[in-house]
Image 1 (cartoon, rainbow, N blue to C red):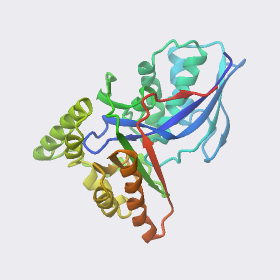
Image 2: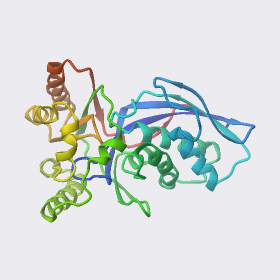
Image 3: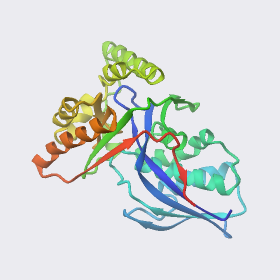
Image 4: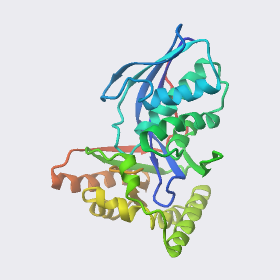
Length: 307
């Protein structure tokens, strides 16, 4: 195989109670990436449509991740990466993770799959580190593995794929402003009060349990963020109003998607998820702020091969 075309999905990370450890994969939202073998070794960035991104291999997250893979598994071939970028950088729905994960996945396929999807996370993290200033896998893991994932350790990349309750549907609203992860991480406190930490641990454990037992009521009670959201909420226009509107419309819970500015909500069933989307967007319409609303089932496959 000399060429491959793949769909690189978006993702929601943190999921309120799981800062830097929880994430889930979206279904209709994502980039298209084509990777082609070349005679000349190394990584080159070809065409990029949809967004203005660097073509310097040392400055593009896709090529940086690909270089990390080739450093571990050299190839006599090179690889050209062409990207249809449909996830806006700084949107909070895993733009850099889609690029980094997509690049290593595609090249791994063209090399005959020397690594599992789980093992590819370590190389994709090089791209995430470039984008956000910190190597974390909470977006990468669901993009590569699909569904919900828990990163027990970023250091050892101990990653667990979690089950997805069948009726769970996500609503994501993206106000068209840019909020870079590296900036939204900079405002976070380095220490947290013990009582807040205890509440967060309880919510995280209960959330994981709810996924295994399909307990939607427990899942709803667990979608609380006592640690990160209080600081990042101030960076997102009308965040509290959007969240309140989502819950009033029937969402199980709502919070900041990744580092923002996108806001996610989880609902039981597509009908409620659509009603939640209507409720959320009315808040941004009052500000005359451009936005996109995405309704998505949980993507349990992750990256998909198109051709």
